[in-house]
Length: 257
Image (cartoon, one colour):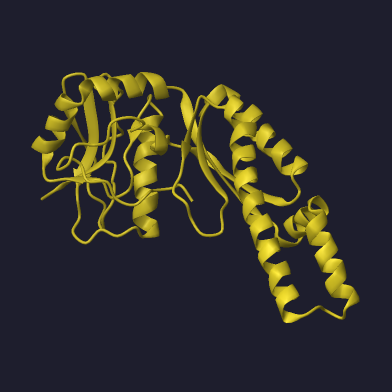
């Protein structure tokens, strides 16, 4: 049976509680594979595993329990290797990288920040900033709504102005929060969000980071700014070289939304 990987720790990491269960129904017993200075927290990988709530929570719970004893490099939900020997091989092959990541991420957590436009507020803003838009809108209003061509022109101009504002606001969100974080990771683009950013934050600085998000939200009333965390630092396990093919296959993100 294949091996499900929750996370990677230092070999000196305290032992996990006895009898801990992980993903699967019934829960698969959690155990540790040690190779040199590193250990992997693993279990058997149940067949047909899907990102259901019960298994997502089990994945997070194992990471939380392991993280209580020190730094853990979290793997995303669904990370599976063919067998224990493959996991041990990855630990040996990538020891320098994982040990460096454990040192860098120790005492740090991830906060995910997403931002989108509040439609009415951003329309008001782009109209107030663009004299040509205001002039065309007023001309249409005075002529009883304007011709089809002028209405189409106005719509295209508004859409272009909003799109430009999205790009500017995405930069502004990152620029405002980056000084309060140790590192930033840009997440994949998704419909409805103009910014999807993950920030690596020292635990001791978490309140200051959250306060900065609140200041950003208050100073930009046309933005809907949402924060999720603290999370295990999923986005910062692999900041550099990608995982060699055929080792541990990553699955869906666990616990980030």
